[in-house]
Image: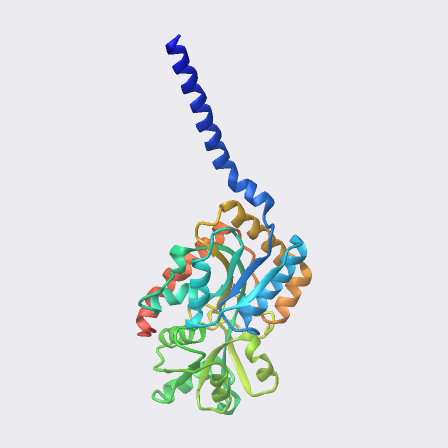
Amino acid sequence: MRTHTITSFQSSRWRHILLASLLTLLAPALWAQNYPEKPIKLVVSFTAGGTTDILAREVANQLTQRWGVSVVVENKPGAAGNLGTEIVGRAAPDGYTLLANSFGPIAINPTLFKNLAVNPHTELQPVAMLAEVPTVLVVPTSLGIQTLADLLKYAKAHPDEMSYGSTGIGTAAHMTGFLFSQRTSMNALHVPYKGAEATRDLVAGRLQFMFATVPSVVPLIKAGQLKPLAISTKMRSRSLPDVPTLREQGVDMATGSWFGLFVPKATPAAIVNKLNDAVVKILDAPQVNSRLVAQGAEPVPMNVDEFSRFVRHEYESWIPIVKASGARAE
């Protein structure tokens, strides 16, 4: 009788343990089923009006319409995009704090900065690729250069006079310009600027070339102030379809700015997948796709695993390039 009592107690205890384990396994799915139940904050690592902000607001508006809860964009610029990363990396992993960030803070900054308060590769979970924005190699029309071959000939004839601008150390413009100089054996000096000053100096002829995002220079190209020579990405830009890529012209490199959505690392996979599914459907919607293309952005839908692999590959690919550039930021 005593043995039977003990056995019944143990059996009851194991049933409770199994039930608790089952609830633990089901909890993430239940969270995702009810998610979202309250407003979501979407942190943007840069100022309003930039490419990251434009993409984030498009996604926020579409999510709000689809889910019936407010997705509020908050711009948190600072520290070369690291401030936004830090805010989200330290937020509760519940799917209610998202991050829209770009190529630089995710792929470049972990190598560029000696000490980061939050490392995006250990404290953030990639959710979805938003878009790729090609950079275009442009020169001032005053140089009289018409093709990439012309620029390379000019560089050989003026080896100590070549300089290129960027919007800051470690930006896509800087790293792409450095890689281009390396691949073409060009001894070009990097001149970092703060924002639009670089483009103004390029137009004025104080710089010889620059890699700029397509949307930022299309008006200057149309006005005849800048001449486009090559697109940096694997594919041509739909905004500048007649401009060939670097690879088409014999320079073995393909790079561009890209933008993605992230959450804190421990966010339940079910919520991450639900966010990804929604973003992919948003990017595939014809009206959204057309709006982004019109602004020079190429939507690139990916599932969570694809985007995670892409982010890791980008980071690892740029480590030797950043180190070779000698660039450091503290």
